[in-house]
Length: 99
Image: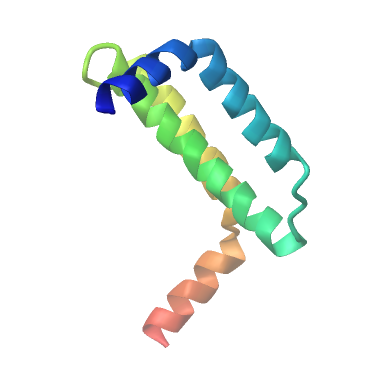
C-alpha cells in the first residue's frame, strides 16, 4: 500500500502542481478582507519584515554585514523609527520611567 501511495504522489505531484496549489491558496487569500486594526498590524509586521530582510541580506552573501550593507540596515532601521516614534513619544516614555 505504501508503495502504491508513493507511486501516486510521485506521479501526480510536481513543481507545477505545487505552484497551482499555492496559486489557488493565494486566490482564496486575495478574497479575504481585513479590518482596519488588522491592516495596521499587518503594516507593522511588513515593516519589521523589511528591516529583518535588510539584516538577512547583509549576512547572506558572506556571513557578515559589510559597510555598504550596514548603511542599508541603518536606513531600514531609521525608516521604522521615523515612521513609529516621535519626539513626543520619547518624551512621554522618559517621563513615565522617571515619573
